[in-house]
Structure formats: C-alpha cells, structure tokens
Length: 127
Image (cartoon, one colour):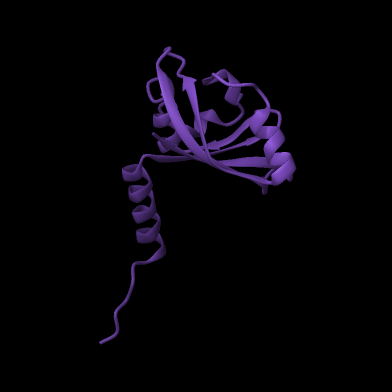
C-alpha cells in the first residue's frame, strides 16, 4: 500500500493553521507604502482585527496609516533597497488604539505579479 499525502487544498489549510498557531502574519506593500496584501495573522498582530473584518479590504491603504512606528521612517525600505532583505528585525510600534506592541519580521524584495513593481514582502511575528 502506498501512502498518499494531503492534497493541495489540505496543505493550504494546514499552512494557514500553522501560521495562525505560530503567531505569524504576512503582508506585502509597495515602496510608497501602499498595501497590496495582508492576511488575518498580520491583521491580528497589528491590532487591526476590530477595524477590518476582511483582510482583502486592506489593499490600497497606506501601511503608515495603520500602525505608528516608534523608529525612524524609511529605515526598513532603505535597507531593503540596499540589501534586498532584512532578517530578524525587532521593533516597537503602537496600534491605532494606542497599545504598545513588539514585533519581529523578515522582509525581502519581490516583484509584485499584479503591478510589476518592486514590493516588500513581510513575514511578521508577534513577540
């Protein structure tokens, strides 16, 4: 008897479940700050769950309007342009409700398939 692994749909569900359990989220934005994509994990980590029910509603919004960075603006974007990736960056931020939080993220340069523009892909983890 040959073992058969899970199908694509099952694997997608397993990945979503694992990401949710690990406290990880994903989002992508252009260098001008325009969000292209955000998943439910990132919505939760960034404290946006109560404001947006559907992560798809985030597309087109400015990332800088959704959280308040405590550090210097443009630092990450400059590093991505120069190095094409940043790993293990930890930083404090405030949610729109004023709650102080910490996150860690890995970011890397991608070419967005829909716009054809350079974009920043972020894997964010609640710490």
